Image (cartoon, rainbow, N blue to C red):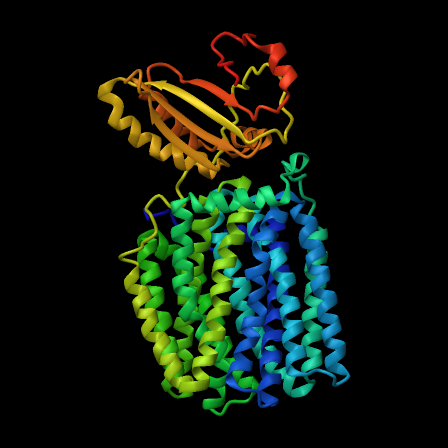
Length: 548
């Protein structure tokens, strides 16, 4: 990726609303990490096996696999502010129930895992909205800094939360730790209530749930830059999950109590905070792919240290792992936010969360099961080796140099077709046919440009695309693509077409002799009477009017 100008890592905190919501997230994440430590140490005290202890991470993250995509659709089609408020309140109520059960001594390992999954489900429903509102809060040049600060809310919380939890566990017990987490959810809801946000655009033309879900999946499937970000997230998350799942067992190997376990987690958090200071200058001088490579190596060093070294040596290595963790997440998160267009930002973020958290959940269970058989140290040694392979894989599957640099401004220029009838929004599927006249010397370049345009059509809603050459006229090329409905086609043209998409379309048009002739083909049972009455009607000069 090309070098970027350094921006102060703390610049977004000068914006009042960003600052309020940032502290709200920090408090909520501190509560979440206190909850994690309380849950895992409860299982350690209950003499649960490695698999059960590792399942805390799985139970917390697995809901992302089921709910991230639906949550992304809801975040794009509902008011994100209200979604955050109600999601935080629901999570708070669930955690209050867990607190009461723990306080009366009725908590069992499996009941704890159930509540952990429910709380994880609440977080999964709000996570895409938290990511999607970041570009609303800060200017574009501060998005990377905002992403880094977002990582701080998780990782500074990792430094503070476990330490607090360790002390509170030893003095007051598990129920108090859970109660503090419940309070943090309610505080986050209050902070979002105080956000006097402008009305969210696009809510007056909400997409149907399943159609919006399908459109988001089609977008990601046709967006090579996004798919590469998701690949890098999965490759890192699978081995990286081992340390989070098995760290309580590392604490047992080192003969540490709950406060010592909190210290191990705190070392990771301290490294993450240090990374916030280092990363802006590093990203201004070093390509993002190099940061991803170095991060995988440093993280692997911490994993290997946790496997074999004594406490005094493990702590500084875990600090390096914390730096590496935030380095990877900052690069991937900011690249994602800068590359996704606004209309699909929540759904794209949901896909990222699904891949990253889902892989973490699977990895946590996998490494826990492996540790049950071959031991914690050997399992962590294997994952350290896998992380070296992840670092090497950046040379094979790097982030594209254009990642985060694409023009995602809206292109609202759409010459509305002069049809002989007014289609209903649900009419369809609609086949759009564009006929081009291409001179022989432009034919190869036209086909190359059309392949790029194909991905634009698929990203913005088309379900099928084809390019044909006329058998009667060698200079005639015909492009066809199918939209699920007239409303989907209208959205593609008025809400989804970005400046980058227009550049691909203009490249095709430039190789054609004049503008293409455009036809809109509907199923024969759509408004048959209106079609017969309008047969032969003409539209405005220069506007295609052919209807079939």
